[in-house]
Image (cartoon, rainbow, N blue to C red):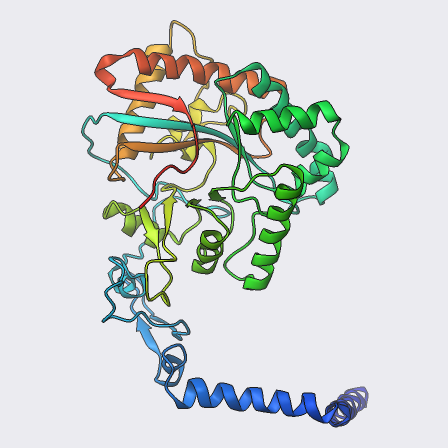
Length: 432
């Protein structure tokens, strides 16, 4: 009896809802109602009936994407504008055409949250003359495990205060910052002296604002209007309060990257960008081709006017243990604050740099630099040194930077290493 009554009530609700919708539609003014109808007709006539390149694929069938080492095949609708193959501006690498070449085989070790361990290995390497840029950074999510205000009170305020005090004391040390929502909150509470110190560090190029968005926006599922809105919000705040314009993009934590964001960054005055989270098979494929640095062009572009230089971080994440080279059990030894270092299940001791261990630690770090350089075509490699909510205490600043400075000096003085290690001067220098 109860089941029949529930079905009856659901049916009544559905009918009433349909009637209400019809009444509301007919209550619309005639003009907007006609505009809605005309817009739909225009879209059909202009794109679908006339075989517009952005809309022909969904009507022409489904593209089959083979997946090796698996028992089934996946299919997807091709919903993007296709590249004009006859154009003189055709890209060297077109991801849609590379999909069939990808080897989708799962690595042995799986790290369920962040991706796959030992994704890219470097088995052979030759000594190269290198320039290595060490880049301290700290990433702040406006919402993840806690609220925006809680993150700011617990970490953000302390990190930004430490940036001001530590960079002022150490003229050779540099840092980047990306999330304007936290900088804005700090600015509202800071004294005039601290505000002046911040401006001085920016003028001295010890501190660089990267991307300059209100947040580090998601890209994989966000609508472009939201991505654009937060970028405008952050850039307007920077212009009004600091009078600066970011020139480098830094997007290490979005779960996927969109060519739309690259397009927006290019037109907002940014010259180059760094990205991180890419499907592991694509990242591995580009690493094998030494194509982890490229000029990113949207599929719909008919000229090179939207090209933007892009550097892809090659390994699992932007954390310290995945930054200096392909072997996380080596790189984690250079996180001198967290000291959570493992080789498989075996814990690796993290030691402060002294006269007794500087030779072994310096050589290991230099070898990681050389291995990482095998994945790129230039002699300059980027080594981020940070993670989420890092550098929140003066002790961490002391541990990280003092030990790093010793290693940098050691490597720089060894002529046989042919390697110059320094803090970044500017995140993006390269132009086409």
